[in-house]
Amino acid sequence: MKTKPCFVFDANVLISAALFPKSVPRQALDRAQELGDLLLSTSVLNELEAVLARPKFDRYLSLSLRKTFIVDLVPTAQLIQPQVRSQIVETKKIIAI
Image 1 (cartoon, helix red, strand yellow):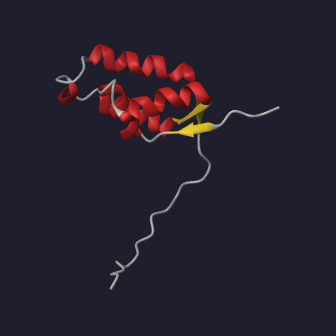
Image 2: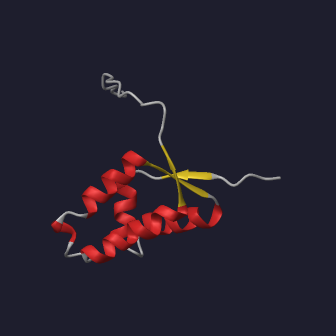
């Protein structure tokens, strides 16, 4: 039995997918939902809800449609709570000669 692939998107990609229906992020989200399972962390969902509620996005899409995007997205995703947090490590800039 072949398992379906899992897909993870960050909040910025989901925001673009919500605001711009013909965008590459939206195409990627739609394709991922066709091919496999969407994994959505609670932190990404919270960020998505907070950012899409901002009035500055009214010129792209009504608040009602932005909320509908989230309402439609959640049932198609597996909500997860990651156990490991990644750490950002600063490195020195490498200059190629």
